[in-house]
Length: 263
Ligand code: DGL
Image 1: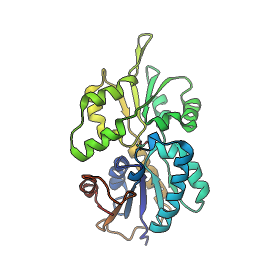
Image 2: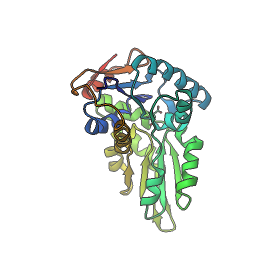
Image 3: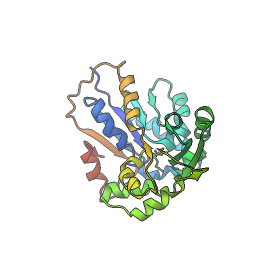
Image 4: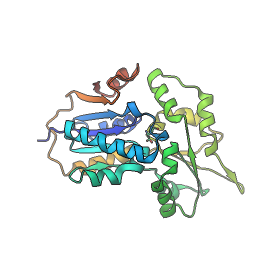
């Protein structure tokens, strides 16, 4: 029987979009949710400094929680650090989250695809390599949004968001070219699925919004097939760890709704 948890990691509360799917596929595993809220937003960090921070933080988290698997439920963090984390902690299992460029390229009919992400993710070599390897025949527009992750956090905490602000952030995703239009927008930040209804409402025309949360949970499920069965009945107390030690108002209530007790 396995008592060690699956650790989910994000800069904030966006990774809860992955937890939501994982709770369906892996209901009996104990979970730990880690929000590096002391460093939010990751999208604005310089790469070297963020990499150093993440490796240091994982050394502590792996020691404290001894997870069976760590799901990096954050594109900004994964596209920067997934290879480095695997190198630094070779005995550990990491599941990464990367922009769904390959499925978007396979699915588009117009050939115009937009990738909506943080400024960090759109800058990454990892993201550029995905486009080169899988979407060379498409026109891919990378849209780095300064504010959407924070708007998603606000929406999750307070239940409302400025729709005009969402509309402004997504507007550059919509391209018309030679009589064709963007038909797919990749949600390449785990915060964004929480705002997808607002995005649909404010979009200038209908598109497919690709959300990878379920695919990430499926990957965790596939890897968990190699583990001993969980000893938890699914009713144990899961922990949410905020690196600030003092999460802003509304976070505690929010994580409780996802089955965690805030630390
Ligand atoms: N949730 C993170 C992602 O998937 C990013 C939010 C941030 O800027 O920290 O990219």
